Length: 337
Image (tube, rainbow, N blue to C red):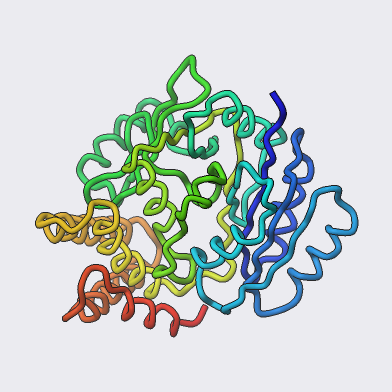
């Protein structure tokens, strides 16, 4: 069977050093992509210079695009990238700009799509996840997750989504298989058949900045439509989680809470129980914030930031529907990094 045409989209903002590491891991793959699209929302030209230098030395078709609307957010940047990929593309892989792929990653992803036509989307395997813990730790994490998934967003074997909109990651590996079913795909590395987007699907541009939960909202929506999603064990990578260009803690808490109410609506539709599940999430959030504040140095500072974010969100929610993110977005956009 001929190899699939695979294109990669990487959205980046003010992280040229992180992007360089990510691109190096892409260009060292055993199976090279046809194209790599860089969608840049940086405030300097450092990233553009880096991409131009690589374009002159790599056989991969490297496409650079600056975000047409600055600071519009990750979903808008992903949608911009989709418009830039070549028409012959069969698989679109979205990567964060702070991941490092093991050498067989792309080959493993392409192989699954070629062998399994029923699969619509995949995500890779991060070895440093919950499954790297001891059996004793996993047992404790499983109990904590059952009590408070905000504190430990974990499930037993397959990636799943809770009714409170929590994206849960596996505690255990399933033996004697190369992949497992998934209800959601991690935004740091998620691949879809290009037909998904040619059929009209796109990322939700109501979410701005780095758009907490946008990956879960998009992929879980496909899952609810009956699309088959999987996690591929041989497609291994490290998510370095760069601290660069992050929003301040209070704004992050505001985004976390505001976007969670929206995510519950998007994932499960307009339902009478949505306010109940969001209230349950708020209780779990406050409990988790208190526990984490006790574990960290400067704990009162962390607690105060979390509670300040909570108070701001509850004020912003007044007279707004759970589908309306305008006030949340204005607050987060006005918060300086």
